[in-house]
Image (cartoon, rainbow, N blue to C red; front, top):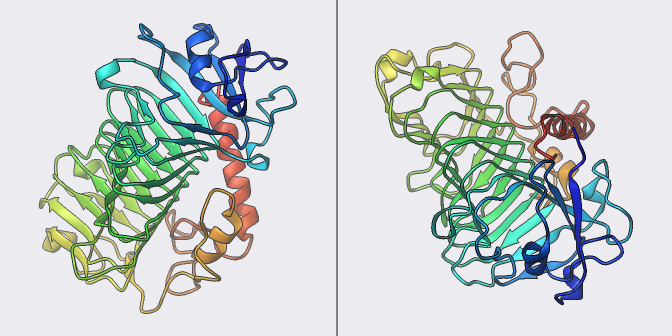
Length: 400
């Protein structure tokens, strides 16, 4: 694979200057977009200086730009030539601030009709767009290790064709949907923390997709919303903690039984939900339920055909269980931000009760339940998992 063309930008210069080279980076993000030549063959790395803020409408694309493909936004140390093998977590993230203008930071569909595909982001923060979503995506958008904060209008709104992948990201205090993928989407290794009840659901899957190894520590309506036809969805190894009770609070919410038999829900931990599973699931078209654990849930199922599933909490398989004490350690305080991965793992590690530590599927493999591995190996194991996932993304080309 050829190396994408690297374009440098230093927003701290705050002037319409530069030519995008290492020696003379563009001084504004918007100026860069207006001046740069897009590499339609190999794509571009847009290398933006660490620790800088991009505020207001500075991301507006140049007039007449209808198709932009293969853009990878990366954080650059501001001094040395950018190397795709560099670890961005050693740098300070770049922040896009919407200025509370009720306009998305990036609107990749609709009014401006920029039919962009393969737009990638790593180590960026997005915040403060008021009543609008932080980012609106049309085609294939990928967010790796990004933060989405403090916005009443939603997080990532994804429509159009192609997959939308959100991996290793942190979400906090976003109203509406944290991620709403109306087509195919994958939500992997993320941490969602909501301190208020402003969100309706954390992750919405409209087409085929997956929610894997996520921690949802929320105070909203539902963690995972399987909307539309539920064909080929995989919901596995999530830890879903609900802190508020008294209204409808769901772990997984289905809106239709169409295709539900192709959906698998396994190795998840549900804590404190009003309804751990809620939805219109019929007698014959039901999801596969394996090796899930439930604690302090008012209903394991609600609106489903309990007779067809079998005795509660078996739900069609004897390895689903209700545990009688807290299944996670809650060591220390809840971690915040993108840089506290080891703390996150310690807080949400499983307690050795029931089948939590080694009773996941595939049975007999030692697989744990929930998002975080047991203390043995702990953070080191998960750090290795994250590195492997990033390497796999790079090989697939999503980091170009």
